[in-house]
Image (cartoon, rainbow, N blue to C red; front, side, top):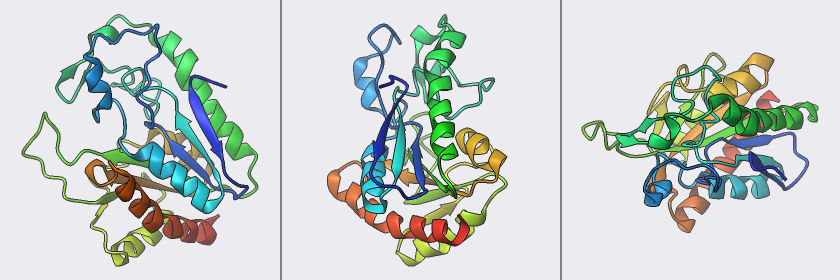
Length: 238
């Protein structure tokens, strides 16, 4: 057991689902100085990601690794030197408890063991493929004029092999797909840069719109749509 991550092993397929922001957990010895209701907000957790990832792991017969703490504790999808790794502001919300926090201690406690476990699982696979699962809010409180109509976004940095397979398949399934939307994977792709692109491992990075995966029906719908497409990407590339 680790407070930095949880795992689900639903089968032996060489496919690892990675969900950096699947948890809103804040350890009891960490005081972020925020209203606890903020922990159900998108600034604290990728809504719907844990549920969809579990459904996908069970459907595909593979393993999944879930980040064990809220991104307000430490952002697992950031490089160790990146701004925002230990956020003091997020979408207009102040996180005062992070201003004097010990960054190195949080890296050692959460960031390092999480990423070491991802490395460990991938090392045990003969022909690995990674599915990175995130979700995005349809509107930012700090930028209400910005519209985010896409139902799902596909993110990547240099390696777009799986993206080129998945995008037309998702469109054919009836989804409004954003290619490098609602933001660029060239900027926000730290976990996949480290574990996939740096090692030549094929991967698919998806972002689901949170309001569409906030309930059981939406989570099942997206898992049913995404599962066969992920498998197609994996079978062509892994």
